[in-house]
Image (cartoon, rainbow, N blue to C red):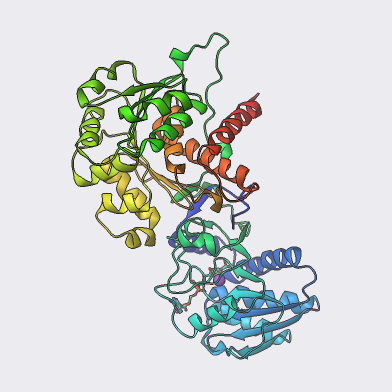
Length: 496
Ligand SMILES: NC(=O)C1=CN([C@@H]2O[C@H](COP(=O)(O)OP(=O)(O)OC[C@H]3O[C@@H](n4cnc5c(N)ncnc54)[C@H](O)[C@@H]3O)[C@@H](O)[C@H]2O)[C@H](O)CC1
Ligand SMILES: [K+]
């Protein structure tokens, strides 16, 4: 699944911030019940547009305001002549405030309200109004059983605000979560809709701000949207390679030369003026025949690398580097170089071991396993709160951290966070990280700051994956390079 992100805003909020926005709106004179009515209208519009001929809807209702939205939706559906049933997972008498008013309105409108039981038939479109931003801790019974029931119903599911069971801050499944075809989220986009396991649960995403005008509020993260990313400076007619940076890729120990070659290929195709590769001698013949444009050097010891330093703009260190004495010694030269640094793969494993310190302001591109090692936590703990992990890494090492995986995150040491909502499962394959590291290096070489290069690089990389997804699985990492080149050209063309 992917989100339909074209017309979504870029600002992402925490659950607490959305609750605060909600409270501010109410304090400013819009009654909570009016917001709930607007929410119901937004959900009903989305439901009718997505399933115009369904004719029947079953609302699964909890006992918070998320349920209130569901009860008012039921009113709209029954008025439109649809068959409507609310299955109340918590006793309807537990509802309070606006949610209780919504329940009363539904009963007055003639909506059938029954206590949920596993034996009920699932009719029409299922509306998940069990748990929203008020979810706290692992989903308890009978909510968990009702969520399983929905997931096994083989009916289309529309989630109100957020699929029940997904944490609005981290995107993690808290025990069990609704797998929706469509989520209609309200007031502000929650960061948890875009990261972690949420990507398997949200389905298509629609947004309605309920006219809350949240644009000026502070947010916790931003969607990585094409229109806020930098463009590479246009090349002057007299441009020459010396102005477009020199990327040095360092890596490729015994048996892992392909990773370094992929990074170098990627840097070349992404427009770096010059690309060099420092690798084991055994990879030289392959490098020279596959990438004749790249200056490939056999490096047996750290001393040989010292001599290269002077004219390099960006070091991309780590693809296939290994963790032997050879890799360690090359990495210890890299840290002394007066140039930008992009560290990937084994450079990060060596960093986690404390072999070297990384220069502040560098870019690191860990996958979850590498990131967990850097933080000294389990991969499971890391995945449970990816935004927090990306921020912690950026702060601990004073670097730009690109935490890879579906919903790649980019964090800086100040706590700024970007979330990539592009990409495709065809990208789950070997070598794609090597391509990303080379791409980010090439963007820095051409004048982007490390932060800009990380954002633009992740966006182009994921966009290239989407672009090639139609061709099916079996994507080779090197295929991405031409697609990235094409997308870079498209961005340049848009600008004219
Ligand atoms: N005017 C408004 O307030 C609007 C709210 N909107 C919707 O409201 C929800 C948020 O509502 P809230 O009442 O804060 O919380 P929930 O409905 O998500 O649920 C809280 C309810 O659930 C119980 N609970 C919490 N954790 C668990 C758990 N792990 N297992 C089982 N039960 C749990 C808890 O006891 C609470 O009573 C928001 O998402 C919107 O959908 C609208 O946006 C309109 C305006
Ligand atoms: K929900």
